[in-house]
Length: 307
Image 1 (cartoon, helix red, strand yellow):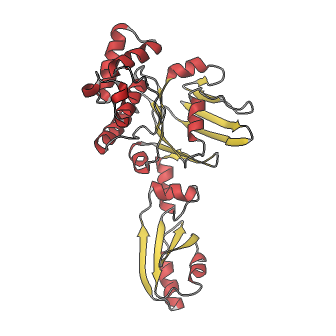
Image 2 (image 1 turned 90 degrees about the vertical axis):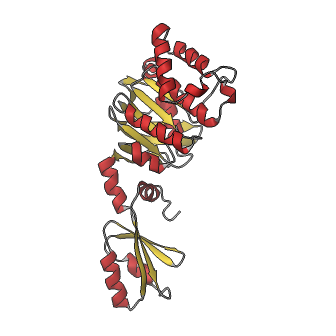
Image 3 (image 1 turned 30 degrees about the horizontal axis):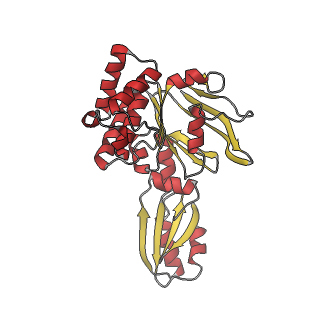
């Protein structure tokens, strides 16, 4: 449903996207992850036709339509929630949604029915007669989500959809996104990795303008397990301990954090660490496995271990 092949995008001499490729199959929710400034928003703007790919890019398709050859069809196929939703502060919520419905080609009973549905889905009933300019950021986000859902698009592209929401609202939006997977393909950008773990079927991690990981839940779960950390505390901080621990098979990195050494390994090395401590005469004060999470995977992929 979303297919990106060798997408490139430059701004002057700055190369923002470097031949990135990924796909999101029909009916999946994909988490689009990366640090600030790595190209996530640029990618979303290409997918939504706000920006054109560089001429040497490969095909970029949304709902079967190429963003360069059929931009109008792409626009008709997507609902887009940008990180900062543009609003008309002088309009009331219902007025704004009626205006947006007309722009999307909805009218009459169909428009009224869809407006009522999205107001209920996004819990906007209590503010439907309020001016947009007087709403909190959280409510504006929910109006933006309602707008994205109006025309029942087959593809949703959501940039930080829970930004500014309180915990109850966040939970409700997560539930809504999860329920939409039956009718929509969703690309979801978020810095809240716990949110991605809860609702996404696939993750795409972007770093330095390149896709580092693009795979389903089973694949990223296996990677997360390998990205876990083992914390080792030794009495007296014996000289050469970090180097010796780094030579244990399966250990890829050793880093000092406070009084501890943190080991990153692709297997369980606790027994090997214990045996090494006995052989070297070290006093082992602590040996703690830190739970493997999507966060640990993200940090390992983007080079922020221990950050």
